[in-house]
Length: 529
Image (cartoon, rainbow, N blue to C red; front, top):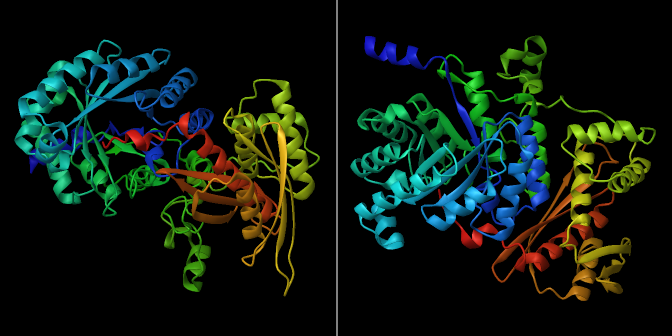
């Protein structure tokens, strides 16, 4: 018993390192591909959140991913910027090159260690896997002293072999050991015991920080991660909103607030500025086009809402009766400056800067400011969410991949009448116009009119509408998902008129499809960690 107490007392002042992989694993969600500029904006938000490590991407996956990692490395000053690399010389060299301008860098290399993966995917023996792992770590050390190693599919690997590999990579210079539950198979108690046993059995385990990267296939990513923390893991790999491949990853906001709220249980703390959680969540949702479900913990719109009369009465009398956190702690009422049509350029520029926007020229600022004024004529108050939407639109318009632009859209509909839409688009230097009538409504007619001009033959697999702010004058944010030849993209559009927002979203998705050959989605070269 005394040994257990001593163990806990030694951990009481420990820091839990937050490793965010939204820009890497999060982007592997089908349709969540981000542009370089969008990744930089999210990276800035993560830095304001005080994330310790930002995994910016997989530089060897594509030229676009390399450029994105490089751009994040050149922008971020305080957080460590990390690049992922397979245990291959070319991958590691590519990561090193992408990260060379970073103030603080890390290379994260990995190789599979489960019998299933070694036999069927790698076609390697255990000795060959160990040899490749050690060589990869040593090569990565040529670029940075901060090297992380992951045994892919650790949850289904043999424990004795895991100990052998991890001991070897520590000797080679790895200072973070990430134990991934790659397919979301583990149970919390089982996964926590694995972390404890690895720490106990590996002779040089005290020379490395143990990390975990849990997937959410059974809805246990956060539970597994927290179980690992209780058993000595001091880094958690997670994503904003739990974004990620398949069912996603452990949600950063849930990990952080669990540790903060239950200080009596968890023997560690984070340096996260929790007031930035909700703004960061909204930014990621807006850029990726993945709405946050209303009842999502911490960042869902209903997370702090009370409808039950008993609950409302209790909260009014004493907040702690039904609330274990304050909404302000996670940013629900923080960082909101209301602007309007009388707001000047300086106030607009200042708030945009706080949201992470940087204008390369006065012309770019003027262009976005004009759109702000146009929106202010339609809406009485402009909130941060509206400004983020303006930034998204500006990014799309300045992108070299914007092949098609919406010039005009007219539509009509009435009870007992067949909806009509007339759309004008610009492709290249030429304008094209089409009329369409559809029984499904004016949105259906508008999108079909666009498709009749572009003839993409893409399949519309998702159409979603969300209001950006409250009120009848709120902007509607529309997400559409198109699929063609295995390429999946999300398009996003916003406007106070939902029909126009829908047309913008459809054209945004079409532009991403057109750019597919230039900026292939990383899931084409998908990696599992």
